[in-house]
Structures are given as C-alpha cells and as structure tokens.
Length: 404
Image 1 (cartoon, rainbow, N blue to C red):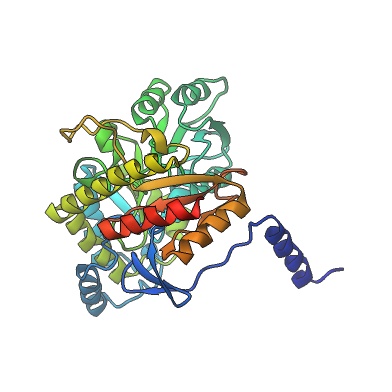
Image 2 (image 1 turned 45 degrees about the vertical axis):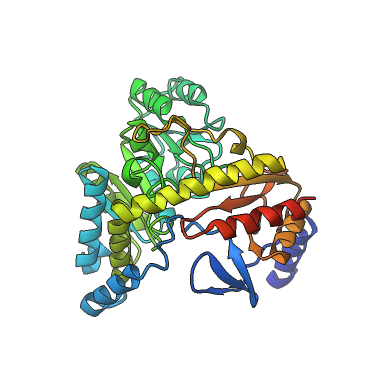
C-alpha cells in the first residue's frame, strides 16, 4: 500500500501538470494596495479591501480599546461564555444600518452561509441556487441535505421554473449572490424576488462584495433594487477591512440561528477586538467618508472600463457592466462594482500573463479552476478607493504589454 505522503505527492504532481497547483505568496506591506511580494514591491489589484479601510487608523484604535476591556480572544462559543459588548454593539449597528430587526455575527462569511443554509433547510426542503454561487453557498446546500436545483447563471426565469416545479417540500429556498465574486456581474434581484414571492420561497442574498461598496449609503444591491430579502448575508472582511461575516433579517431569524446554526453554536466567537474594528469601519463606511471612498471607487471603475475597451480586453460581464441603475444616483448608467474580470482562457496562459504583470510591478494572481469553470481562467482585477491615478495607469500599461 502506498504511503499517504506518496499518494499526496502524486496528486500534487497531477495539479502541477494541468497548471492548477497553487501556493500562498509571501506578502508584506503597510496597506492592501502597496505590498511586497517575495521581497519585490508591487501594486496589488487582487485585494477585497474595496474602501481601503483595512489600514485606516480607526480600526486598530477601536481594536486596542476592546482588547483592553474584554481581552483578545472570545474564549468560547457565545452560547457558552456569553455575549461581549463588542459583539452586541456591532450587531445592533449592523441591523440599524440595514434597517432590519436583527443581525448575528459569525467568525467568517463562509460560516455564515453554511450556518444559515443548514439551519433553514433539511431533507424535506428544496434549495434553488445560481450556477455560479460561491463555494460557501455550494457547501451549505450540500450539507443541508435538501434537494438542490441549480439554475443557469443569473437566469431568473429558470429559477422561477425550478421553484414552481413538482414536489412536496416543507420549504423552498432561493439563494444567490448579489455581486458575483468572479464575474463581477449583478444578479437580477427584482425578478428573483418576484419568483420567490410567487412560490412562497425564502430569498437568501449574499451581499459579500456589494455590502459597503454599492447601493444607497453602501447598504448593498438589495437596497439599490428595492428588494428586502428574507436573509441577507455579508462579510466584515471586504469593504469594512476587518474579518467575520453576518446575517441580517427578522428577530425570529436571528433567534433560530442561535439555536440551530452549527457554525455559530460550535465555534469560538469572533475576537472582541475584531468585532470592535468592524464596528469602527462601519461608522466610516456609513458616513461621509464612506460616500467619498465609494465615489472614488466608482470613478476608478469608469476610467478603467474605458481603458480596457481601448485595449480590447474584458471578461464575461465586463463589456456591459451589467446591473440595475442606482435609484439614489442622478446618473442613469448601470451600477459598476469593483470586480473587473479579464478572461484569458487556458491556465498556462493566465499564469504567464500574471507573471508578466508581476515583472511590471503589478500583483494580480491568475484565477484558475476549480475557482472558475474549466477554460475560463482569468485575471480578477479588484479596485480599491486606496488606489490612485498612477496605480491605475501602471495597471493599464502593464496589461497592454503582458497581453501582447
């Protein structure tokens, strides 16, 4: 019998042979934009720190105060060792900001999706899920033991047909991202909400990449579309620059998750300093500073779209910048998020283009299967309010050369 090590080495060799072997790059730097990768300075265009808050001085200040008051670690599950002030304050702040009754914080966004899907769905239920939903949603669907039906990406009519199909179910659930993490396009939230209402289905929307960046006051794409989902899921580690995830909705939803969500019950709670840092970031994101940074982010995207069009490159959704118009804006142009995919195709070619960018001072790793479908390897360019005009010009110049 072959040893485990030999078996794993063979699997690693197979990944390498198909240009799918991955490793974590050594990283340092004073911000999420100006970084050092393997001792080489780079401008990062792969961070989800969309508002540039990860390095804002308010976050470590709030974290230090919480650590002095509550200690660093939460010590146990909140059902065992109790809620701490930082947890309670953050959840009240999130619920108030989103205009809902309650919120519940999880240690990660991944755990939030797993926790809500496995708590609300079981073997007697149906989950209808977008084909390009995040891995955390896919895993939550699988672990729920519900019947899972997948609809073609962003096809609300297909979702409606699956929801209305035959079968006796205790519950029907419809789950989607709002801003998709790899294609950067926007779900047809209005049509999906109508489909859920028509079939008495629970609508679950993951706003991980839209929360803080898009919609009125940064409240996300559901708010922009006038949609109130039954369950809103989002993260604290992207636009807010901290860590963790949360759900928001009615008080009964929060209470049932406290009782049934295994990823909340059976894990140590978010460290109080992290919760306090997220709360401080939410203060910034919800105020004039957040508006200013969202304005910069939008300007960056509009400028980059024009430059990419001139280069003749783009991704699955880039060319049309899909999405509804923002009712809070005077502009009638579509909402444009911070994710700009540049489709390459083959794994080897994507790695070569990424290496070409690195040689020109740009850090943008190749995204390959299984993160994206086979044959659709890409660069996933993410913009931040922390970028400046010189950063964007350097990116475009490097792309023009690396893609030749």
